[in-house]
Image 1: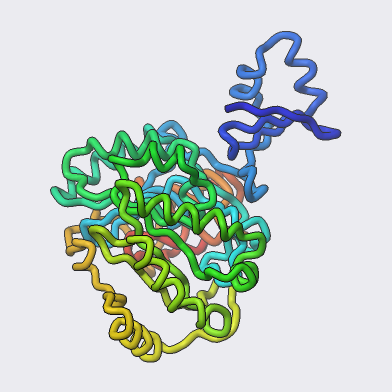
Image 2 (image 1 turned 120 degrees about the vertical axis):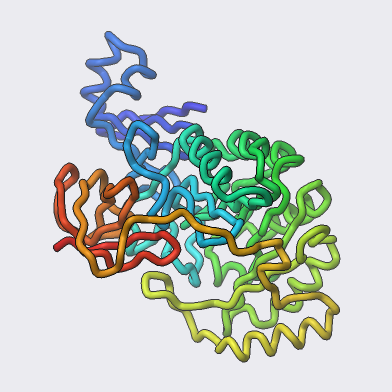
Length: 380
């Protein structure tokens, strides 16, 4: 669980293959004569904590930190007014996809900070929100990055599967961090895995995601399809890149038996976002759905999906205290997810604020966005 190595200037520990702790070597050598390495790791104040995969600063979100799990898009819980709750335990990705909507991966130009949520804190908060939502809740593990990088995933999934009111547990993943053992640990608790496969040709896969282990992901898809976990294959259709791959992916999904309880495929349209990566052109929604209709007729499988296909229905959402355009006060508690941004706590919610102020400062900010309970502001 704990690896250690050294650089020229630092003593480096890696916890659970994701949490990288760096301590100046001179300080560590002085302290190690008096304290255990576990004590030093926990109590040394000037250590750097990084996401090993992305190399970015990693902020621990615990109950003691005072950082709420509602309000931010990069971590915590997102409630969009249905019986589905998005559960975001970690940010950061092991891939650098050319079409990434959130510019994730080690080569990101916009992301500055990653977050990881304490599993006990997440569990406690999920119990409260599921109780509010009622019966028939789906917990969907996703995020700005790869959810399977979360080192406490299996333990948390086991615990949330016991929460009264949780009917479905699902996850979006590129599959690379998973293996046969981890799949076996999730069986009987996780109901569906949405597996991102956007090409079956190694040449095309490399163009979409440099360094992509296609053979491993294909084997993983077959493994999931043969397990108790349902499989939904979720390619992103990027015009000019993988047009010829889409029918092959449909055939592959049907061949291996994806979609026992849920639809076997969830084909996503590539959409260029403001802070995402842009590549090629995006087809219109009309053209996209016309092509899906054509493939539906050709393969006899439903591809144009609706919330009802997953049992998703409208439910009251947790109310937040913010109004767009109004000014609020709050305290900056960490660096923000993106450059030029800070994480602020205000009125019991987490808020992403465009600000140049320092951690610990109290600021006033104007609310720019409140949609789906994701709060964004700008310091005034």
